[in-house]
Image: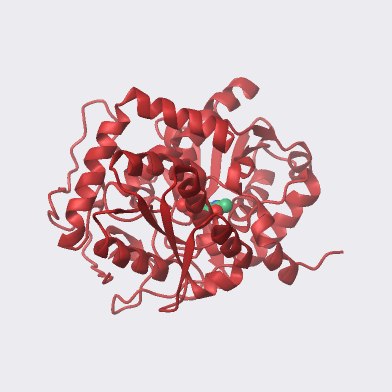
Length: 422
Ligand SMILES: *Cc1c(COP(=O)(O)O)cnc(C)c1O
């Protein structure tokens, strides 16, 4: 699919989803029209995909209100994925940093090793409702591909996963895992051979086979309804964390910190705190190896408004509007755009976006491993890096939740290449 960049801040009406700034009286200004978060989001897809997006939106709206759908999803999250995940008090890390009390939300303990299964189970139930039997997906770190292959095995769907060949090299084990689960992994050799190129191919496949095929998108990206729907499937993270922290501390946290690739684990843990203005929401992007365009994936530091892969958000691009290449030590954060709801939260100053470099993330990974016996994914290590910077400046009465979006097993090869152990 073509990548269109526009630099105008507020696009006019596109495919029926109108830019609207109206909000219900008394409601936070963050309530937006469906498919739009302020001016961000929307549905920028070829005509051939309009019907599929509309079908998905209709089915999702119906499912959302269907008690049987909700009960089945809750049951699968519990008995298959392993929810609820614990909120763990990181005692030694807290003591070492000397500031806020640090809790870790343990999404790394979920089946398949990351938060992504929450969304995959939700979408798999929709595929079944729509009477489709073939699923295509894209994957960066391989985590979404593994989660997709897993639910396809569980539901008996045919599964094709597109993956950039650069990512296939970096995440060899996950490629084998997907194949073992019965999925076909198709390597994508175009562009930077990473996530955005895999998304293009998955979309091409979807356009061609739309009658039988569902596109199981792995983050809060793409055309409406994906950013809203995927967020809803991850909201459970924040709903649980909120209850758990209140139970443990008798109050809401001072801050919630999560890494941001497309933004699904972050929006999942943020969402139920958005109305609590005192809770700081902090997203951590990949600062990569330098601040130069091409060396990082920090969309809020150098990104400009643009349309990429179906949605209007901040996009890393050059002056001609060509999509920039990105770099991060963690494949899951290596993407030139960011979920449109994050663009809106940033505009509203409701959430703050910072970055952590490759080196900081690697150090944070080692620190958490040694102080708490938890090896976080390199993506999640970016969030850990931020709490390491921030906590010493905070009060002992402050409470911080860090979302550990996944476990580091998939990164052991990269960790071995990059970490000097003493
Ligand atoms: C995929 C992935 C991410 C990045 O995706 P988001 O949509 O930003 O959450 C973060 N952490 C882990 C462990 C992942 O697998």
